[in-house]
Length: 364
Ligand code: TRP
Image 1: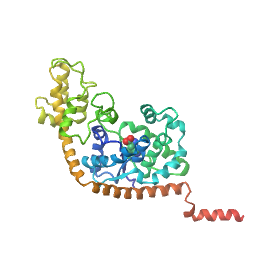
Image 2: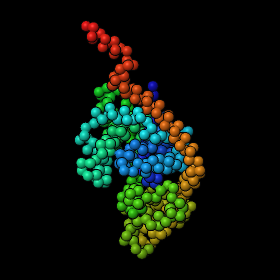
Image 3: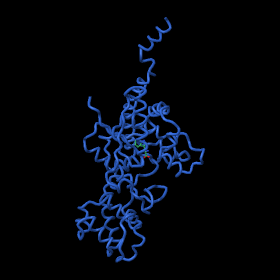
Image 4: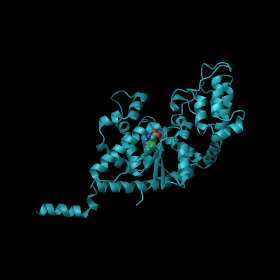
C-alpha cells in the first residue's frame, strides 16, 4: 500500500494569530491544502497544550479557540479539505501520551531546547515547573502520531519537538514493532519568514512583547503599526546611508514583497535589490519605504480581514464546523490507538490466542 501523505499541525489558542504565524506557517498550509498532494490534512487548536503554561488563565484559552478558528478560515483553510479540531476533545491523545512517557527520560526533556528557553522565559521558580508543561513534547508526539502525520509544517522553534517525536517513534517501533510513522518537519523556505521579527525589530513577534501585527488588525491600525516600525537608528536624514541588516522594514519586505508590487506601488524601482541599494547609498527616506510596505501588507491582509468579518456573523456555524472536525479527528485517533494497543499487546480481551495461551500455561 502506498504510504499516505498526511499533514498534521496546530497552534496554541492563546491569542489571535499574527503575521508571524501567517508567513511562518499559515500561508504555506493553505498552499499545501490547495496543492491536492495530500491524502489528509489536520489542523489542531492545541487548547490542552496551551493550558500547560496558562494554568492561571484557562478562560484566555477558552476565549481564543474561536479567534484562532476564525483566523484559519479567513486565511483560506477550507473545512471541506482540512479537518480543524480541538485537542482537548480527543481523549485518545492522553492515552497515547501516557504510554509514550515511558519512552522518554527526564534528562532528555531537560535538554529539549524549546522547553529550556520556555522555562527561562516564563520564569518558573526552579522547582515549580508543572509536570504537564515539562512533558508537553511527549503530548505533542501523541498529537502527530495519532494522525499518522508525515509532514508537519511549523516554525523553526518546533524543530526540537519533531526530533523528540521521531525519537519516540523509533523507540516505540523498536520495542513493539513497526507501528508509528516518523514525521518530517516542513519549514518556511524564505529566511525572513522563518523568524519574522516584531515591530521593534528585537525578538520574534509575540503577544507578551506587544510587537505584533494581527491578522484581524484594522486597515488604520495596520498602517499605524507599519509607520512605527524599527528601522536603522543611524539613518537620521534622508541623505544618510542606511543599513538593511536588522532593519525590520526590509525584513518584512523580504517576507512579503514580490516583483509585481513594484509595478503597482513603486514603479521607479525594478525590484527589491534596487530599493535596498538606494537605501544603503543614502537618499531614500524611511517613510517612503514604509508607505510601500504598508501598501503591500494591505493588499495581502485586506482580503483576510474582510473574510474574517463575514465569518464573524455566524459564530455558531464555526463551532458546528469544529464539532464535526473533532468527530472526524477522534475516529482517526481511535484507530491509531487501537493499533498501538495491539502492538503493545495490551488488547487482552480482543486477543483470543492470548487467553488460550494463558489457559494452557495453567493446565501444564
Ligand atoms: N507547539 C505548537 C505551538 O506552540 C502547537 C502544537 C501542539 C503543534 N501540538 C502540535 C504543532 C503538533 C504541530 C504539531 O504552536
